[in-house]
Image 1 (cartoon, rainbow, N blue to C red):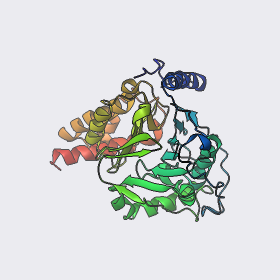
Image 2 (image 1 turned 135 degrees about the vertical axis):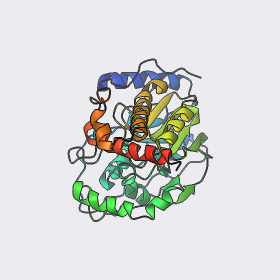
Image 3 (image 1 turned 30 degrees about the vertical axis):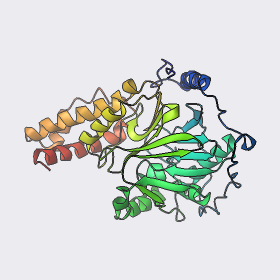
Image 4 (image 1 turned 180 degrees about the vertical axis):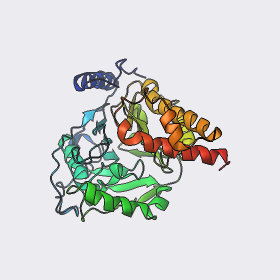
Length: 359
């Protein structure tokens, strides 16, 4: 196994981030005997070449504004690239581009992990993939059904990709919540989310750990249990030593708790820490070549919330009393703190009440 570079990524500037990833990619490339993007002629069974990029209209995306945010793939291993969204919450300024996505180029096509947070962003991600390889996108894996990770599916579906996700997401899509969120985003993220935006369900629903191969590259879909969501699904690219972890890791920013089960989330972090990970790509923030260190912010923040809110419940404090009395300075300077922290604390307060009642 090739050791990853010792240069950490969290908190680095853009130049240091590229340098650190370049070192990791170079080390992995030295052990890789196949080209990063094989030509069609070099493959024994030539895969179908991708058709031209579907237009926004062909993808069912009409009347939206053009994407002007900078989406540039970053190579994190010989076959894996990521795009990194803004560290802050969804906003008009970032045009909904506040999450990460990744893709793996194999000799038989591309596997994509998440599709970004608006239909035009998904279309732009597909365009960026076409700059790197002419091979078609075969599968798109949905890490979980939060709007900032899957609204871009329309473009990939129009390009012929199959969508895979964890079966637990079916109940969410069948509820009123996705429609309410879409209506909200049609207002808060107009004109990048408009009336042409639609919810795209999975073609294949995963129940348990699932292994598959594409172009000789081995993959494993790893359900995390009820953690950040009920349907968290990681993608392990075994030959690359790359784990695509979705929102189980928020790099260098405060996580969004929502309806998470923080006890399960912490257990999932312990689980993924046991994998021989060279590069860890979370759902937000920079990639990591030091996973144990860079998972610390997410883990420490969740532990802090649980301990403080558990004590508040035990001492019968109200949430407002507990929140005012808490010293938030260890996390107050992190991106997204102002937007997320109070809601996170309240959701964990409710979770601690349920745990106290044995629910």
